Amino acid sequence: MRIPCPFCGPRMLEEFVYIGDAALLRRPAEGATCDYVFLRDNPAGRHRELWRHEGGCGAWLVVERDVTTHEIFGAALAEARDAG
Image 1 (cartoon, rainbow, N blue to C red):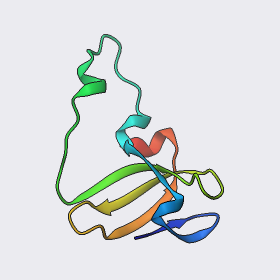
Image 2: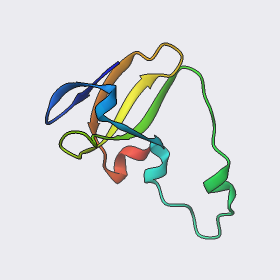
Image 3: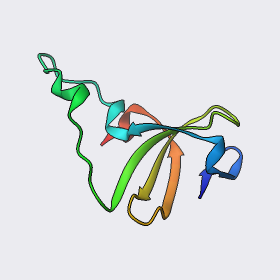
Image 4: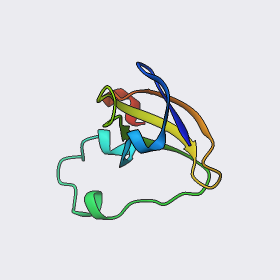
């Protein structure tokens, strides 16, 4: 699987570290319970994920990919507004 880094171009999966759901970029609402940390959806199909280019430029990316086929639809620099 190749992930398209905006700075380095397409790179092999081994250069990246999977962080989790891109929703991690959102802060929990005040008074949120520990469910925010421990209970996550596990959807099939297209999903937005947070990855770090650990073996390259160090960029934090939001990667949109199909978790059943591993097809990657794109990647962009992670920003708090991208969490949606």
